[in-house]
Image (cartoon, rainbow, N blue to C red; front, side):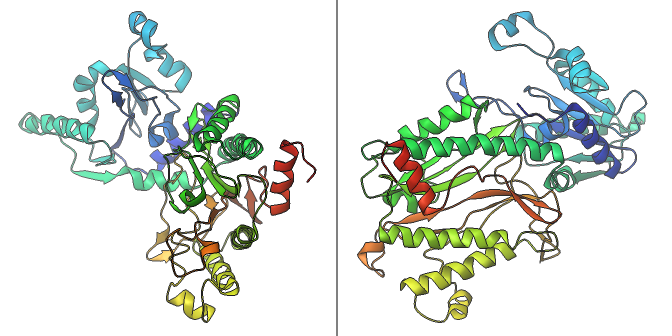
Length: 444
């Protein structure tokens, strides 16, 4: 399985520290463990910023980055080895492993952090920290600052400035390295196989959760520990609910099913949506809406390249969809006027994509000084236009009602345009119908 190499984590730490002021410290806590119910925990997933700088997978850990520190700039607090707890909960790196396997210059037991970290903060003029992202740790950090301030008369020097760490770090995360793109390719390939499997398994009478099970089987078979987000398997009118996650309704003959699902590998997400007929054959109305969304999806790729701004792809999808809705009689009027009036919003109410990376809705500013960000190589994003015609929309003919279609791909900006990571899932009408027909032993 493709993973981020240790050398890359070291490079990231150095790049971050190069942007920090002299005589400063950056502090990042690991993600807390969340209780599912009573004494059962949710499956642990590391905080993305913490993971980005360390690759360290354990809870109860804190990173301190201290540029210029004589005894090592990268300090990691983590749990000690404990044979009894490891018998129950799994192996721990301990302080030796933190240095040997995860590149820490110095490592201390997390139980000693109250005694050691205030001393590392004391005398530093600036603290870089993401205030508000971990409320419990916010309070703990403030207590350490109070402790330092209480000793001011003895010569202790508390920091004079707090700076948001996430701004620096999230701009770094926006640009994907070759290693990151390789991991994202693998996640996309696994997710593509899962979507193909769901298409092949689909038939009337199944429930949405049965297709979800096919997806998750392929995720785990490919080595993914978990989905990147809650899978959406939405049959019929459920496809018009953008974040539908109940996934418990029967799949009916004649309906479409919209699947928005992706796995993550080494904490990097994939995000794919495909829409297809439950029975393997599009009705004329379904085909018309589907091919309009597909045309918007394909048009967007032509607007993703270095020098283009973030919103161009979205604007392109809006123009294609509005012109198509007019042609189908679902909207009436001049295309430019309809776009200006946002008359398409009842049918297409979301944007055409978002940044993609360690978080499925990844970090990074979309605007700089009020202007749409200009795309650069290494930026990764989704392209996901859609049309949703509510089942109770009495302003359109009944034959269109309850049709929801979204088509989503993952792309990375390259020097010459963009690379589509999710091409392993068919999306042409003929391709989908042929795939589903072959799975049923029929002649397409």
